Length: 149
Picture 1 (cartoon, rainbow, N blue to C red):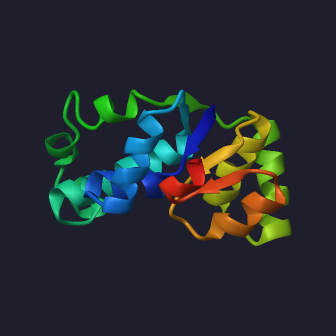
Picture 2 (cartoon, rainbow, N blue to C red):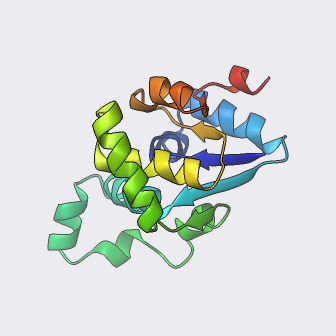
């Protein structure tokens, strides 16, 4: 089963959110190929820096301390479990269509377009902006372990 993970799911998981932890546990019992794209990578790392530093990622950068919070294996080790799909011209075109059609912000439109382009039918996310558009595009919006049954 090909599953795309939105940054909201990854962030909630590392924050220790019980619903996210249960969802990841249930997914670990299935034959899942996990995917993210470069957008999710960027969003996740940005939030990871804020979470681990306790201040905004921008302020960490201003202090010249990114390497203090992005260590050699952390969070890379966590992200290595996902295959990273690059955004291409076709995905950008589809994303632009989704922005107009569904009133999505650019990153969300790129995530949805990545799923469609690569034939990924499951999107794990806690971002409510995806709920209705996933249904309209034939993608299963997964925000709860019960939806996997």
